[in-house]
Image (cartoon, rainbow, N blue to C red; front, side, top):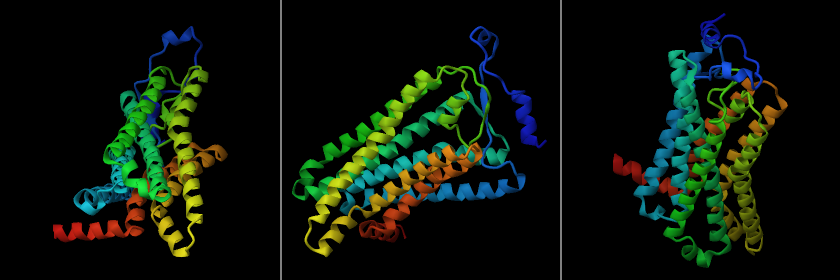
Length: 330
């Protein structure tokens, strides 16, 4: 038995079976959980530490550069880049919710996380994850107005309305996060304290709970509809209108120019929702929670890291602003 397994066994003892209603008063509530991480192999820990530390630094630096480029260049003070800078901020928060804790756990060889810490991590995970999804929907609406109603674009997407859309996204994300917290706070007893993930995954924690999950499932479906189904529906509707409008453009050059304005956003949407769907399908097919944790790395780490590169490589305005930013710094 390795050191981690020995420590977990000392703290949690044997796996607990869900008790009856009469027996629950004799149990003590869980004070901490244990995150299994991606691998128990001691030889892989330095590699994982270096890999995730470098990916986290690249993610934060790349998204900060996008924010600085947009804020410092007056040519980028438009609705599209305003939403992009807010998406970069949400990506930094989304990654910072899970990766630093994982890196510290690898370095200190401690996988324990307190109940309050787990609840806090889940709260921010839901907040920034939902905010990412809603901002992508808002950006799709922005492209819809720009392509389908170009003459009224500046009137519709005025600064006040843009700020209102971002504030509404933040408010809805906070609401979703608090609704999820209200469910978790009702959970007192758990079958196990070991979470087969590198962060406090909401679905796994609910599966470990000793309680009637029928009401919780209804609320979770409602939360999923707000944070997932509605944004995806908005994005599909926007791009349906965009494609219909582009197909009516007579020249091939006009079609390419119209579509190129939303190419970066479409790439990010496919990456974000494609990886999320891939994780869901892989967890449904595979019964191994560890494999699901490995698949989750894609949308929690890789996607936020690639977003700045996608917008930088496919956008001339961002490239120009980056060159100005570096030249002024040097």
